[in-house]
Image (cartoon, rainbow, N blue to C red; front, side, top):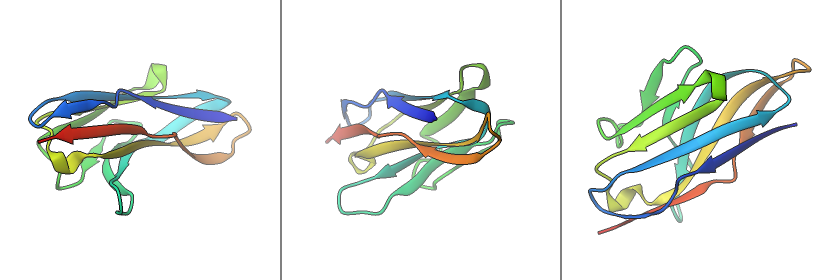
Length: 120
């Protein structure tokens, strides 16, 4: 079994910063891509940022220049540094990991989400 757990969500004022963390654990052989997705009330889940095992990144246009994704492969952890937050960034943020298990199964594992609320 593989689990993904996010942390770091909070209530913050517009213009503020937050850092989200996500750690994968369990029966892991290796982790390929990791990503942060978000879902605002009444909207579909969307990609915010993702990062490959080698460190290649891509971002949604709405967060470019404000969010930075990074990862620590030794810790099976991905981070999302969010600066200059806006009320429209309010959402539940979910982490997803593309995992090769110790049984060599390919798994896409989602976390339970962490709430980010940005007040104006």
